[in-house]
Length: 152
Length: 179
Image 1 (cartoon, rainbow over the protein chains, first blue to last red):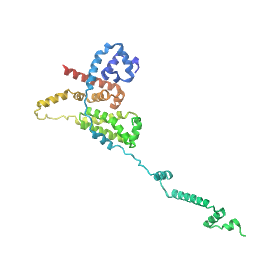
Image 2 (spheres, chains in turn cyan, orange):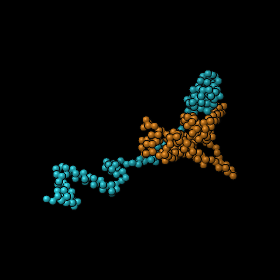
Image 3 (cartoon, rainbow over the protein chains, first blue to last red):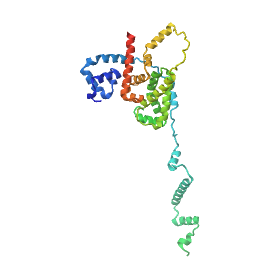
Image 4 (cartoon, rainbow over the protein chains, first blue to last red):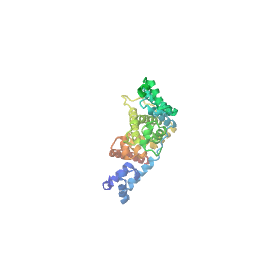
C-alpha cells in the first residue's frame, strides 16, 4: 500500500489490529503511517496509549517450556540417511559396472585385462615378432611356416 | 548450519542429515509448541501436537516445495491438529442436567483459581479460537500479517479483523478488572 492510500482511519486500524509499535505494522504501510502519525500525534494519542497497555500486558505471557525429551522424540522419527559409506573397491565397482556386475561385461573386462597383461609380458621379454606370431598361429591352429615363409 | 538457506536445510534434513534435522527442530519446535499450548492450554497435549506436526514434516520434506516458510507450513499443520482436538473436546449437550454437586472451593483453591483467572493465559483462553490463533501468530510470535494469514488460511483483511476483535475483547477484560 502506498503512502497516498494510508489515511488517518487506516492508521487507527493498524493500531487496533497490530498494536502501538510500528515495528509490528505491515512493512508496506509502515513508513507512510509513521508520517501521518508524526503530523498529528494528539489525534492518535489515546489509541496508542490503549494499544501500548495491551502490548505490555501481552509481554507478561508465561508459557511453560516443552520437556527436554520432546526434541529427542521428534528426531527419533526423522528420516535416516539412505546411502552408506562404500569401500574404495565398491566405488570402483560402481564406476566400472554402473548397471551392476553382469557376466558378459565381466568377461569382456577379464579378456581385456588378460590381453593387456600378455602384451606387457611379451614386450618385456624381447621376444621377436616371428616367435610371437608362431605362438599365435600355434594357438589358433594355423601353419605359420607354410603361410608366411613358404615351403623351402 | 546457520549459514544455510532454509531450502538447503530442508533438503539436507530430508536426506537424513542429523545436524540439519536438529537445526530445523531447534528453530521451529518452540514456536509450534507455544502456538499449540495457547490453543490447548495443556502442556502434554501441546507436546503431542508438536510431535505430530514434525512427523508430518518428515514425511513432507522429500517433496518440499518452497512456497512458504517452514514455520508457516508447520503452524498451519499445528493449528489444524489443535482445531481437531478442540472440536472433540466441545461439550455435548445433555438431555437432562446432571445432579448438582457441591462446587464450593476451599480458600486456597479459590485463591489459586482467582489468580489463574487473572493471568493472561486465562484471558487468552477465553477468546474465540480464531481470534486466539491470530493473536498468537501475529502479536505473540511476531509473524508478518501475510505469514499469519497464510498459516490460518484467511485473507489479510480477515486476519486484521480477528486481531482487532481479539485486542478489543482483551482491553475490555482488563478495563473490567480495573473497575
